Image (cartoon, rainbow, N blue to C red):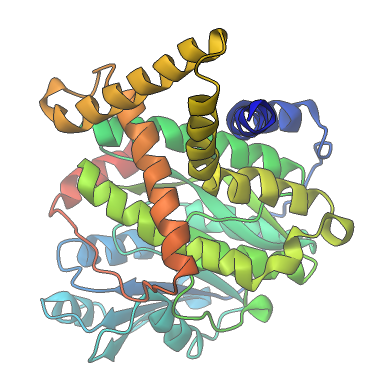
Length: 391
């Protein structure tokens, strides 16, 4: 039990602190410079799936048209996924020149819509973006410039929430996003990145293959890029502004369960990338950044059980008490949400919420539950997003 306890504790510490430290020290690879070219404008097709996005689709199209990318090299395809609101009516106002609408009468899910839109795409480069994501002029150009390096197959933007101060959930998720983005930047500079921001990323069309409906584009596609021998990079100057609509614990939990289940399934579909003898540092990054992190709740439960057997042995009684207190504070943090975003209780609550979602998400995948459809919840606060994109 002592060995089990120490092993689980060591893995948890490694996931959250050890891996970032070793990554920063260069153990998994040294930094490198990626080529960049200005003034080259290959043809681009922007893919925008939309399900009941009347509150944001108009601002999205205006944002894309004001991106600064040459109109003659730009196509924008909006796919309406069984929308029952005014989404299609709004898009039709912009149809013509470089904007097109593809209407799918029944809802199929984001990945299925992307498959249908890419089949109609004519651009050399594909840009995938969400209907509620806004960005500054020049961002598309900044992304596409990175493809001057023939080793790069995918370029992702840096995500940023416009409402991180709204609730304790959005506040802590904003902190986590900054930590996650820093990790991705470190992996990117070393050619180890295997994930993208689903709100905005670009890839070479030649690397595209249809996505299974039960997989997420922001993980399945970077894994495919890695398998093809290309690299994924993060462009820190390209910032994608979104509003986190999951601002309460319950909605955040559901979102994370869905994302983790789809990403875990994508990793299982591409499990050969976990072989370090074939993929080297990329494999090590996947183990450390993704797989072991998803397994943290199993380590926590095993450590708790092992500690129960060791509770009579000196220091372990204190460690067991600390775990009890931590989980009790987490429960209080979830129950007493009115305490506000600066409450100390929100930290253990957020930690436990994320790991509970990892547990449920991986189990959902193991038992075959799929999440092929998505129902975005958008607040009609386009003005807030616009302000965020201009600051």
